[in-house]
Image 1 (cartoon, rainbow, N blue to C red):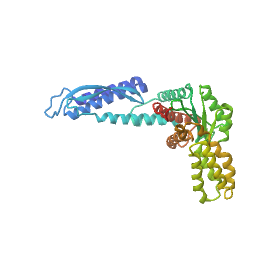
Image 2: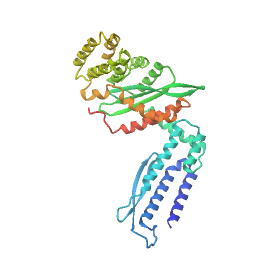
Image 3: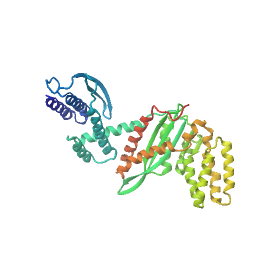
Image 4: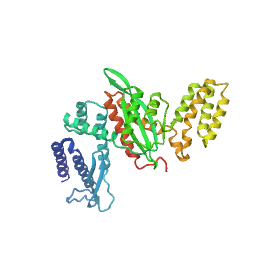
Length: 383
């Protein structure tokens, strides 16, 4: 009897896949999970549904509806119950892991820009099913459409903006080139973070940055009180052109890193770094300026190049002192985007080399969209 139920469920799942192809995958997974849970309950009870057995150790008690959210959408499952309330189907968790692994494997192929033929082969190996190249292409197109809609969504008022970039290897005309990946994050008046957008291009730095910032503005980005970034020349030129009146903060972390280039002796690096941290950790602007004056005097003779650099560069990290103290530490550096860059790198290490800019943008967008969704109900700080 149990074998009959399992065979019928498998037949039903295969019929869904045969009839609807990829579009029937959600229904097929639902059928298979429900079947697996019933089979597991039968094993737990020592008897299949409606079976008389001397080995029976308990009794079924109907089903409980459960809407399971997955990458395929919400799956309407029926979780088997028992009278002793001690049973919970482990196949539900196993099925979830399998579904996630399957969808992730397929998505990885899409976002890495591999050929549809290779995707078809992997799907066949993972699923034991035949999938046409046209189905794979359609699924990839749907993913691109979703990601493009996210990248082009309307924005609004964001109080603080964090900008940063990283580079990924992209193949073009037989050459391997560095493509700039630009990312913008925002923090609104309620303290909620959001990934505002991303862009991938092999174009000149200033041109790329200007086009990216102009696009954010065209999508409705407004109300900016403060921008934090590093001192990249192309970024600075673009920022001044698109948002000329917005106060700018140079990332304090990058400033501390940059200082190392001007320290003449290894023995001075630790004390210099500590002194710069003390300046940025000052309770207010007056104290920071006082500590800066002491810093310049202390190293005037031993590190004149450092003093010359610090006199102009370090005050570029003082804009954050104009923010509320509870906000200052969270947005005085580009760490908000740096953490996103780390997550992107963790994924792009698998790809290593992208076949084109579009493939790179697809993966970056997918990662950032997922993170952005996770951020929706979390505050970086209060008002």
